[in-house]
Length: 97
Image 1 (cartoon, rainbow, N blue to C red):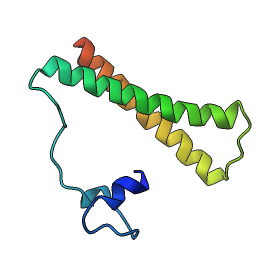
Image 2: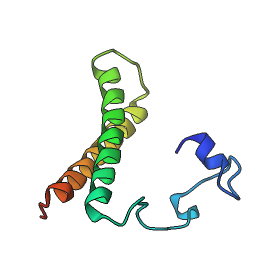
Image 3: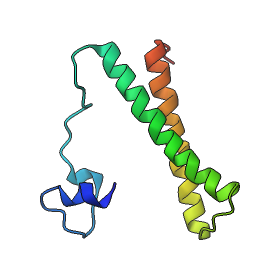
Image 4: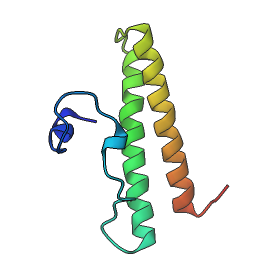
């Protein structure tokens, strides 16, 4: 999460942070229309995946130097973002596995 987001959370002051510290509210939707919620989820997942993919391309194609442990994290984040995108796309298309 970005630092400015963490600063907005009561009780989080630059120390250890866990997603468990956040209250679970379910999916955030702006409408009751499930189709619109699927579209919003798809767009968010796609944008997140593209952001992670751009970082992978910066490393592999542009020669950005990273510590070996950072490379593993980079690839894992891109992989998880791609999985979320694929799941959101399948839900939007009505394809359930």
